[in-house]
Image (cartoon, rainbow, N blue to C red; front, side, top):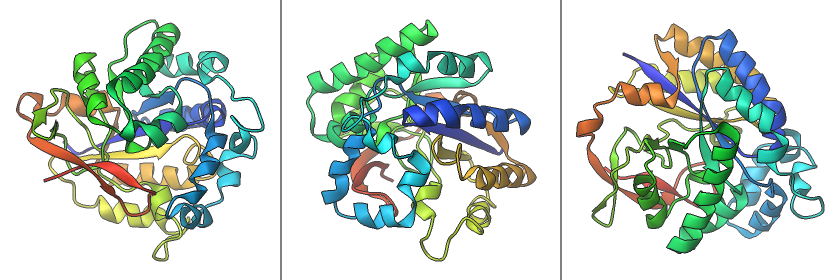
Length: 299
């Protein structure tokens, strides 16, 4: 069975309020499943300004209009403007996603805190951040979370251990090529890892001649031949749920024509032989089109 699991990262207040409803309507119209991974605490995205000193940041920003996609308010939240609490202010929208039949999971509590700091933090810090997100999830959805997708594909050993200890059914915190059981310095983490297997649109745009006019065609060429375990495609509520919606709809149409089922992560997992997934180590290394090092599956 050819499947592409659609993993939707929701990073910001604006993405939750505007992008999520648009994506729900589009997915329902295309009869496609998906999993929404929510940022559940305050939107402090304005603090990303400190990334300006990181290698490659200005180059990426120059390839896409950050203001156009995120809005000037988002770029000031947590600095010149108060950071809105997504879990409180968007409670009805979050619940509506689950009520519409889509799978929901945890992205993080504070996107900037997790993405920019978790790699170097200890167990206590990591556990505290994750428990904050879990507490909001429980309050909003009235149940325990079962799925996690790390902000910016950033993880540490403690975060991987917590996926197992806290009983997550699976997590999607890495980049790779096929589902696996992760190991860290030889330690087995008994929680299936469903890595993102395809590049994201923001990694490709305005590189090697790729524009909004030919981006869908490029992606569809990548999925022409399906691997045995299908694909996981990560999209963002702020991008594909906004100005890039036409490209996303081209992909949905194209993937259906290629014979793929478009499913939520839990449905993708259900068709995997979870009792005999291979063990693979993870490492931090650079991925084309992104800033810094990401958690990546090794062969």
